[in-house]
Image 1: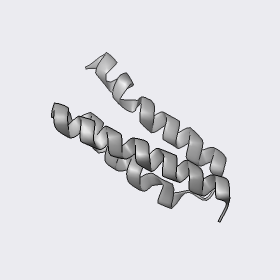
Image 2: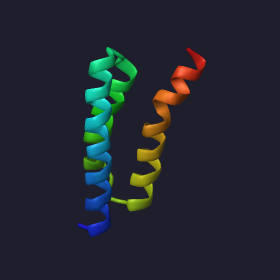
Image 3: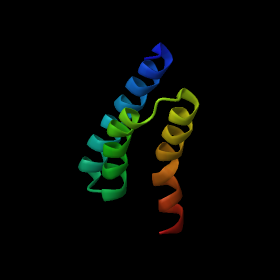
Image 4: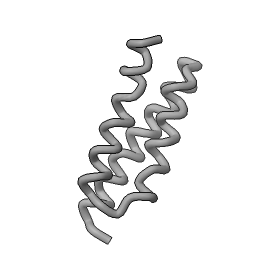
Length: 69
């Protein structure tokens, strides 16, 4: 396993934990489920570039959803 992959996965999982706690505090399902997705998605990717792209897309998801709803 690549060191960069491990570090990026740790970073996105940590951010996902913060999203989950914040979404639970604010009672916002989009932020909470985005946090859960950020915690678990690094287990499914073996390419660092794809991991970073998907992680950034997931991090921006609550902002995009709140803009349209």
